[in-house]
Each structure stands twice: as structure tokens, then as C-alpha cells.
Amino acid sequence: MKASVCFVFAVVCWIAAQAEVSPMILTLSKVMNELNNISKEMNKSTTLKSPTINDLEDCCVKSALGCFRSKVFHLSVPERKLKSLNIISRELHKSIIVSVCKPEEIQKAQCKSCDSYKVVDSQTFVQNFQTLLQKVMVLFFNSSL
Image (tube, rainbow, N blue to C red; front, side, top):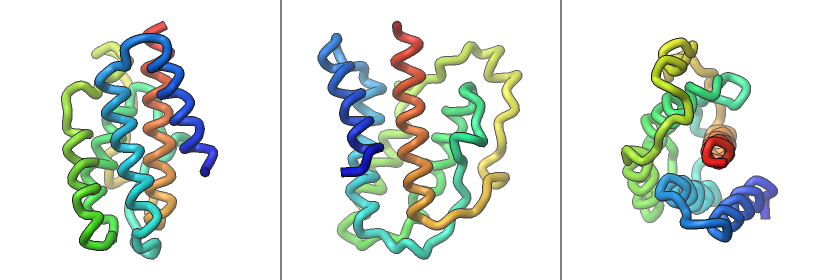
């Protein structure tokens, strides 16, 4: 099992053990599971523009999730995996995904537009997406302490 999947699983289990799991963590975990589901069978030669953790300020995380959501249907997957893409898009559309930053901090942040990110292959796109989901979970956890 990949280290990133183990990490997310451990974070989710720990949070669940501490208290009621937040709807946002459940949503992000669902997205992570669907990404793992499609990554095994997607065409890895597809290229997409993708944010990376190095490109992001903490206050730009919600914006970056929107970029991933807008590009997820460009992943080349078998027809039987299209449901997973729909689930990812639907889950990321939910309003429970919130920023840990104050509105004025978000306005000051220098968030990039989706089209300004580098083009990467689909495998890297999914890895960047998973890393961002992990970052969101950690930011959320740290802000709720």
C-alpha cells in the first residue's frame, strides 16, 4: 500500500477515534478512495494542468481543489470508472469544504488561476490531488485543535 494512502487512512482513523468525524473529513476521504479506485486503471499518458503543494499558500487550498474538480473529467478512465469521476466532482462541490483561513487572508493570498499551473501526466495529477487532500485534512485537523 502506498505511503500516502496509509497516511490518510491513519489520519482519518485517528480523527474518528478522537471524536465525531467531521463531514468535511468524510467527504475528503471519499474523494481519496475514489481517486485510488481510478488511478489503477486510468490512461497514464493523458496530460493535465495540476497544482502542486509547492505552488500553494494555505489560503489557496479551496481554490486548488476547484482546479482539480474542473479537470477531473479530463482523466482518461474506462467507462466503468466514470461513476468514480462523478462522485469526485459531486463531493468536491459540497459546501462543507471550507477554508481554514479568514476571508481577509483569502483575499490577500496570491492564488493562481487553474490555467497557470504546469502540465503533468495523469498519474502525477492524481498524486498531486491526493497530496492536496492530505494537506487539507491536516490543515483542518490543526485548526480544530
